Image (cartoon, rainbow, N blue to C red; front, side):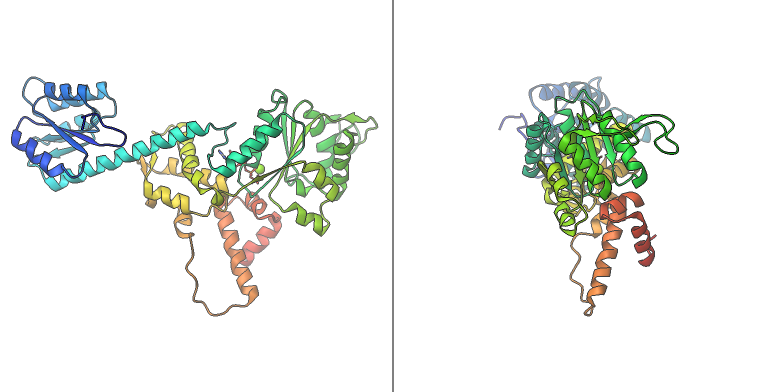
Length: 459
Ligand SMILES: Nc1ncnc2c1ncn2[C@@H]1O[C@H](COP(=O)(O)OP(=O)(O)OP(=O)(O)O)[C@@H](O)[C@H]1O
Ligand SMILES: [Mg+2]
């Protein structure tokens, strides 16, 4: 085998002037790594280092000649930054240890060498190396997947969504995006705008669930001066503001019946009038709307106009919940990790395989938004560079598959209440206890949420 590490191989270089220590260590560590080479001096070590690739160097601090193991650490760092080194010394003073760490040594061990201890350290280095190369692989996949306008994900379902986005972007067709809360609907609406030939125009987002009915019309269509008390000047509405751009109507189902008629009229005729105005205005906006509710059901219930639904739904885009695209969780987690480490000026962190497995298995009721929030919290609160299962919030570790309960038979009402309570708890946690967002995610009003929280004693 050539001394060049191929792919994921782990090669160790042992540098000590005592042949007994070299052979003893080589024998003791043989099983842990793929290949071991030895050197008796700094120069010999540098020669080996020139011609081969080593993931770990174990070196004595005291070496023959005028260069010590400490200097070797610095030289190796210059040649290949990030090379892991474990230093051995008989003079295990705190100062040498601190100096070694400062120069980039990974660990420190004192003579007489405890073989078990050094085995542990080597195993740790091998794990760390593996984690790093996995992380690199993830980064490559991320680059390969080539995020479209900030949308990360390589799974089939998301790739289909991206294809749809590209297809509709340069048309003026209305798009209706459906998906659970936090799945990325607004991100997708923006991507459609950014990839369209309207991208230099404005992107105007209006949340129909957040506006009181009395203000909605004036917000959408604008008003003339004096058209109602407080209308002290003429104000352009969202339609007017999004001329040449995209109008994003979020939570479209929250639009009151009266405004549904007005909206339908704009979509059909391209015309509208300002509140209190006479003049017919031409709308040029491209309409993208979004909802987390089941509109066909609302149509059936008679609360949403069928003709409006068809007008809005020329191109439907369905965004799957995160639990249906778990293969993207590592990509997303890594993307947010890098993003927040930069944003919060923290050194780059890694998620260890066990923690990543928990992330991949969790149910994520709050979808990508919840994952994003969890990762941001970890970046801020975990002081170490490796994130392990213990760091994860309890709500993730706990809520996987609840064991079947051996509880006595319950009435249907009790079962429904227990399920409702659990859903509210999960949604509160997923939305960082933000009540408006939680209510939105659950598709109920804030008042209903408060009522239920009181009822179930959730605070
Ligand atoms: N595929 C993705 N790649 C990167 N970031 C994502 C992705 N999907 C969602 N996000 C991020 O997750 C957060 C929530 O996304 P967004 O606001 O678009 O969700 P939403 O579907 O509009 O939710 P809601 O229904 O609650 O309004 C945002 O910070 C967004 O940038
Ligand atoms: Mg949204």
